[in-house]
Length: 280
Image 1 (cartoon, rainbow, N blue to C red):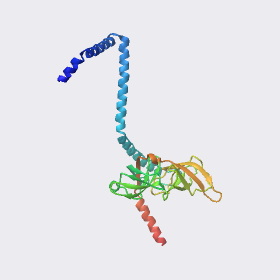
Image 2: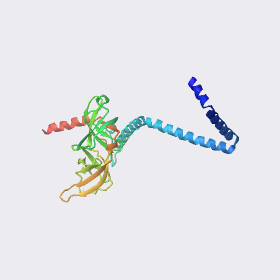
Image 3: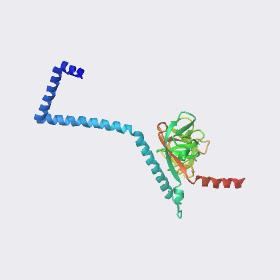
Image 4: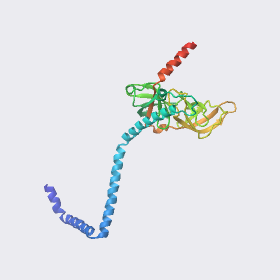
């Protein structure tokens, strides 16, 4: 307290000067219309700037929460789209009645990427969901923009995904315009590009066409983006195109993924196993 009193005494002339300046400014603003309006507009401008900065900081601190909410909403929309695409499939033949249980067979679990590889020949991704959340090996994994990979190993709280950027991973894909079906397979080079193989060169392929997951797929829902045709080449000695797709998923900036569960997969695989046994 004594130090404060001593400070005021030592600086009393300066403090009186500042007080008089503030009082003068206040009287000018109060008794002069022009300066009053100028002060009002200027103060409002800086108050608005301060509030905008404060809101930006608050929004930035909530980005993780906002992203998680958006991911959950996208999972719900993915389920709706998959159900509608199966309820009203394109090129529906006369007399075909869609099965409602088949249309609703896919469900989605949102997971956060905690580790991601893109610079190896066989890349894997780790997510923060495991068996405790219903995740099992063999489930498909997609992002908000396209195919990501397939679950390989699971622990209670984590799962490792075989990325589409893996030399042993292939996904059945269909060109939207030509309806031709082939397989998307990575060549181990550019993480932004993937090859599409087994597409007959006697079919017209359009540059810029979209490649999506085909209906002949038990792991992924149909019509999930794989990529867009970037280049098409023909080898005279082969009967297939050399097609290069630009991947729809940006693996370097992958934050959230959706693990796809096909509730009828076990039934489908058991039925196929019976067919295999009969052939033996």
